[in-house]
Amino acid sequence: MGNHTNSPRVPKSESPILPTSSSSSSSSSSDDHSPKNLILRPSWFLIWLILSLLLLTFFLQWRGGYIDPISRLSHSAPDDSPGSGCAIDFTKIWKFYNESNVSPKICITSTTSASLDDVLPWIFYHKVVGVTNFFLFVEGKAANPNVSLVLQSIPGVKVIPRTGELEEQQAKSRIMNETWLASAFHKPCNGVLFVKQTLNMEMAIAMAREAGMEWILHLDTDELLHPAGSQDYSIRQIFAKVPTDVDTLIFHNYESAVERDDIKVPFDEVSLFKKNFGHLPNDSNFELYRLATRGNPNYFLTYGNGKSAARIQDNLRPNGAHRWYNYVKEPKEIESNEAAVLHYTYARFSDLTSRRDRCNKCQPTKEDVKRCFWLEFDQSAYIIASTETPERMLQWYRDHVVWTNEEMNLRLLKYGVMTRIYSPMVILQKLRESGLFASVIASARAPSA
Image (tube, rainbow, N blue to C red):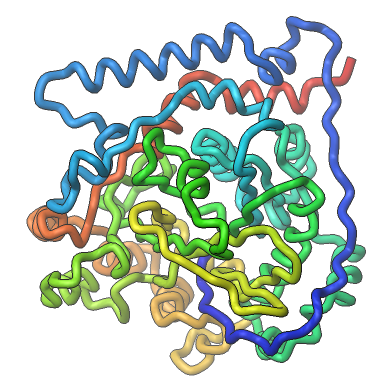
């Protein structure tokens, strides 16, 4: 879940030989009025959804003195200008299942063990902002047959379970012989995940080329793209403006700042974010940075080097979970000035124990946890979750993660270190209210005619 750092770049070499991928298909009902067909094509259901979204937008803009959370993002920051706002083009709802003619074609690859309740909103949010395809390497909860059945029923989503056959294919790949990747072999927790993500990203490049994609990103399922700076909250508009000679586009990450200790659905409940250094003014007061750490090891709890997107081209390869590189040239990269990746890290109190349970290879001591976790905060969180009572864990969580000091929050908002972002929660709220998620699940699990 984002606990990674960049890997060193390797010497120039030839492109890897990647295994071919097979496409998945979903069955469709012949009954024009079945629940499945109500989802798989424009219908009265989608017309109602569009009208509801448009009415919500009108209502929010009409109320006197209220700033529309969609058309005016990050309104609490002093550097927010009228031109930095963006309005969502809700007609994209029509394109959920008709993406053949869009440009540029953007895909996301992810390695996930998350539940359906987490992955399904993540997918459809990114469809709304303009992502076309998804290559999901699943294990854990996400590999449950009932979950995979739903995910692979969604057009543009390819589900790849971690099987023995997959591991055999990846063992023969070019990147397995790279010395920089070998440094993570046989290391528990972060090391294992780093290797899996890198190998999966390598395979996703081949799948993306086969599917005709133009850009690829690697995102975890606790991260959302935030296309600020685009006219209609569209990630496609961001990529359409990238010069043709640019190979990679870097998105700085913003980190969630939860204000309660009982968050259950982070995407729906979190609106406060700490900005990345890359989006802060150069003359910001460094005293504010110190306040923003709240006694934790670093400015961010977890990673702070953002995520990058790569143009699909010959000799493309992963460079760890956060960057892409090329075997025969040094890629030309630029940074996005406004768009960002929203990282919902440790947003639920249960994240403390769930991370601990996924990684039980290390003793909860300061020395041994360094084998398992690369970031200091993760090390501390693992020790706390492994040694303290639930009551002491909750107090530690409140002290180190939860932002309960409203005066401090307002000060950091005033000077632009923090920002309010409401668009994801508004989008997902309307998708939930529309019944879309429930309909997709029911459609996928309905018996074939």
